[in-house]
Length: 84
Image 1 (cartoon, rainbow, N blue to C red):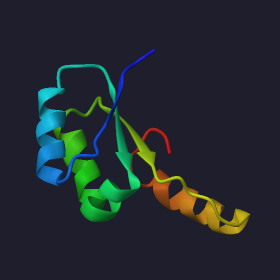
Image 2 (image 1 turned 135 degrees about the vertical axis):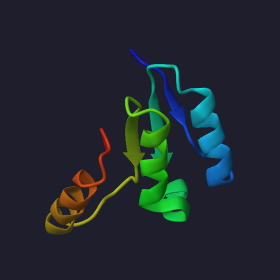
Image 3 (image 1 turned 135 degrees about the horizontal axis):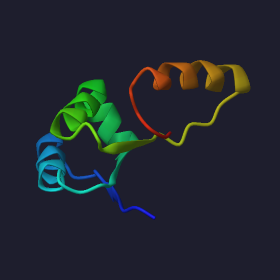
C-alpha cells in the first residue's frame, strides 16, 4: 500500500511546494477537479518535472453517457496520468 497525498491547497504554488517537499518519497499525488480546472495540464507536467516517478491520480469524478466517457477517457490518457 502506498500513500496518496491530495493536492487540494488554495493555489498551484502551494501544491507544487508540497510536491517538492515530497519528491523523495514513492507516493501517489491526487489532483482533484478544482485543482485541475484551475491549474490545468501544465500543473500535471510540473508535478512530473519535480519527480518523474510520482504516480498521479487525476480525480475528476467523471460521469456521463458512455460515448462521452469513452472520448473523455481517450483524452485523459494523453495527459500522462496513472489513474483517473
